[in-house]
Length: 409
Image (cartoon, rainbow, N blue to C red; front, side, top):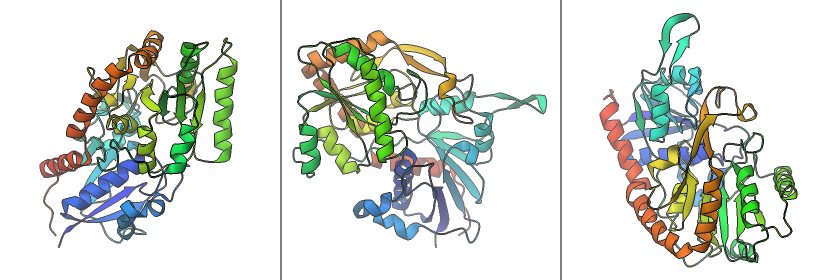
């Protein structure tokens, strides 16, 4: 007989937390030490139905999903933002990507302190949790700070899916990308979030404008591919993104502007791998303001193609400065337009990339691609060796052995 291990998470959603949840559940199942059950949750407005649409790999999760709790579980885990953490089991674990800024909300710390153990995705997130301190509004002498142990559990890449390939199964997807007249394209992957120009977290607006500015009136410019959305895969969402791209394009003073293409919709991991492997997709760029981890960057690194990213926050755990391009910049307060109550709070700070790095890296990767490929292969080797799904599972086992108490079965 095994101890019960119930995991409350957005297991069936097309979201970063959904992907994180599926990997974590799969790892815990593979440990073969617990009777694992899942309480399936929503994740904002993101689309559900991932398991049904990816049944070959993830169908086994269906039999683990339960409608509700019958009794107090031995081990309880919640995969969500910390202000939602609630202790339900005999031993309680909170799993979160963490925070993309320099500070978190006081309710996050209080949520963490309800649990017996907190797992976050990066050293950046752990540092923020352990250094966020607040004065208690009811007692000025009382300092609210984290007291629960925090461990880093990185998000392991699936080496069976994200890898270099020569044959493409999805001919329609391949042919559509092949319709680009350009043979060289940068790709950006991430939600186009709220915030005035230059203040959305993934920095998509600035990325698009800087691309136009860098390659305007160029004799043979590369292209930019945006795999993005605002909220979901709806037609209305797509139209909003296209209008935003056109507004930026109209603001550029140039006779001949390079092409920006939009990839909009839900894609499987296998399809994303084929997109990354397409011969016209040459490099990933991310001028993000902050990452709890940066999963797309890790997965793209497994394709052995060059990466340029902001030189700050969670992705620095796996991106090596000698193998990728890391942009310098400064740490500044979040603009009010990007703040989200309880998540991205007033007074916290994140990264603003120095524009000179953007222009320089855009040009250098394009003009010296063979040299960048050599470095990218080394990054790919490093990622496969140290940040795979199997390595993550071993890290989970080590953390559990060190922290979880033995409970009666």
